[in-house]
Image (cartoon, rainbow, N blue to C red):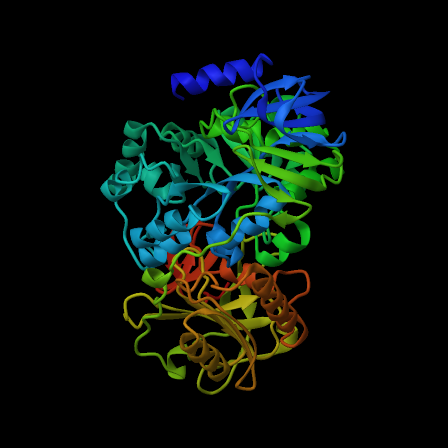
Length: 580
């Protein structure tokens, strides 16, 4: 801040000069002292000058006794998982009170490399939402799959001081960290040298393994599957991100282990939140409601969504309503439903009564639009010729992307082909490489997903985002894949060689170029069709669940384009299981 601006800020704060904007008659939520105090908020040049009672301002906004909260911060999100561009995501999230997001664009960077990060940075400049990107640390995610790019430490360093960058994205390669892999350590050393935080991802680590992971300088984790894991990470000095997204919803369970001391090291995050949930239930405001319904003190909940996240990521200019902080302010009717009525970002009114107030412009996605590079594909590539009736299966579990390593008995015909029986709930699943014309295809079996007919194919398969298809016959699955390639990526639901529903995602095979409402409506139709026409289990999110079946960093069993992978033991498995 220049000297003349600082002088004026001091004069406005001391009531010697009228504020640019005076938000009058608020109930100000103080996340430092855990109190609510009635008063006004004086704003000067986009910064909070003072709180209390002020005589006048050049512009006055009467809050009508509503609660004034600091702007909400999502501490970990993948914007691409909403299937929306950053511009559209911001348009929808901001009216719900979200003013800052810590976003990891490793989905698009795994497809397009740093060209994808460049696109996301440019697109973020076109929304009022302050998007702080974490440089993806795992491109590819692991050595067990093929992604669209490889990003090394020196490429990451080129972005470390970019104003739109907040640190290093989730370090999913815990094996590489603990084994001292040179490529992984180069990234961690670079982050230390540049003094930027590193996000974590450690769903299966505990004890001495967790200590080794923390010793590498990793600051956060959003993969706590139990209260014990949460407490162990807090004891080790980590920030724990309490997640409530479209597929993973550990927040209510983890809140049972929360106390006032632990709460100061906990943040709220959505991780992956689809447009249907975003437009239907909201964003971080929805997580605040969940917290209060679970018995958390409302101001503690707000603290986890604001001050804690700001402190974790070194955003000292926000996270609270206090002098010299950026004027990111949200008005809410109450501290239970958290109905948001007005949002300011940097002192500018950007949303009111659910409406985004700024004009919407669109970044050209051309450089990242063509991402379908499939070679040597045919129905024959999906054929399973099994030599045993006892097989390994990926066991799907509701409300989590952690899968089981199951054993099933199946029937085969004389050629070794799986004979599908609906009561067994064992279906086919395949992953097809789509980045470099390698022609790689891997096949396996999945149980608990529920599909009884037809096929679902998509290009959203965390984190390498190869084509993922599930179905009951290779012919139907092959038809779905061919339709998916023709529409340049996205999601396709088919039955009897007919497309029932689809959602094209032409931007890197991950995001739509349509308005959020259109994406929501088409995605809703896709989901209902998958459940009602194909039989996918009602308890599952049919698309989000499927997206994670190829992610080889979350236990126990996953499928990559190279084969069936046992995450726990870090090895590929044959589909056929040995007899007991």
